[in-house]
Amino acid sequence: MTAPENSTPAPDPTLMLLDGASLWFRAFHAIPEKVTAPDGSPVNAVRGFVDMVASLIRTHRPTRLVVCLDLDWRPAFRVAAIPSYKAHRVAAGSDGTVEEVPPALLPQVPVILEVLAAAGIATGGAAGFEADDVLGTLAARETGDRVIVVSGDRDLLQVVTDSPVPVRVLYAGRGLAKAELFDPALVAERYGVPAERAGAAYAELAALRGDPSDGLPGVKGVGEKTAASLLQQYGSLDAVRAAALDESTSLAKGMRVKLAAAADYLDAALPVVRVATDADVELSRSDVLPAEPADPEQLTALAQRWGLERPVSALVAALADR
Image (tube, rainbow, N blue to C red; front, side, top):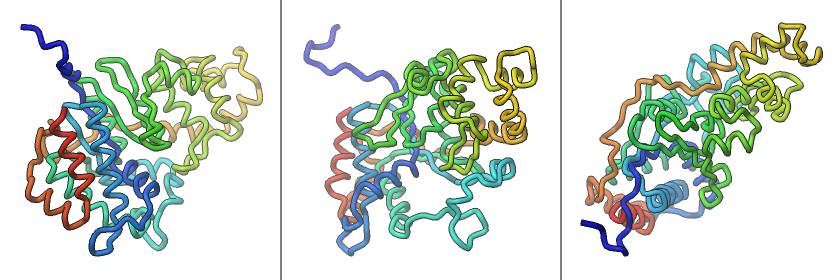
C-alpha cells in the first residue's frame, strides 16, 4: 500500500547530539536577564535553551537525542599535557577545577536538567571528560543512524565524516538562526584542509594555529591560512613535521625553524585538541525521543513554577509532531 500523496514522509533515522553547556551559555547571553520566573529568578538561559531544543526537534525531526554534559570541563589529562588549557576560565580563588560562570546562569542549569528529565530527553556524560568527548564518543560509536552534532564550538568540526555513517555538525556559533550544517566538503572549503580527511585535518589545523579561547598557544608565526596551506601541501600534520626534518623537501627554512621550536608543544597539543572517542559515556535514560513527556505532571509543575509555559508547550508540541 502506498502512502497518500499529501502525507509527510518519515524522517531518516537520526541521532542528534547537543553540546549542552555551549548552547545554554549562548542562550544566556542572547536573552536578557530581565526575563524572569514569577518569583523574580532569572530564567533567560532556561527559556532560550528549551526553545532551541524545540526548534531543533521541529526542524530536523531526530528519532534519538542526547544532551551531552561536561562532567569535567577541564580534564586532568589535558591540563597535564598543556597547563595553560582553559586556565583563563578558572574561577578566581579555586583550585583550577571550577569554571568561572555568570552567577545568574549557575542556578538555571539544574532547572534545565529537570525540564529535560520530565520531558523524557536523555542526557549523557562521562567522568573525567568534557561534553566534546561525549559527543565524539557517541558519534564514533554509531553504526546505524546518521548523526547531527549541534554546538557553538568549532572544535567539534573534527567529528565530521561520511563513514561509517554520515556525521554532520550544525555549527551554531552565531546563533541557531544562522547555524550552518557542515559536511566534510564544507569543512574543506571553509578552512582549506584536505577534503579526503577533513575532520581529522581540522583538529591538526587547530593544533597548528592554536586557540586562545582554550589557552592553546599554537605554533608561533603560524596562523590559520599558513596551517591550512601546510596541510594541503603535505596531507597531514605528521607529514608536515617529517618534512621539517628532511632538508631535501621544499619546506622553507624559516618554517622548519618554527616547527622545530614547537616540537614539544605539538607532541602535547594533538591529544588535547582531539576529542576522545572512547569515553565511558553513561546516559540518563534511553536516547529515543518520546512522543509525549515522560512525566507530564512534573513538566507542567516546572513550567508553572518557572514561568516556562510557552517554551515547554512548544517542546511538547515538537515531540508530538515528529
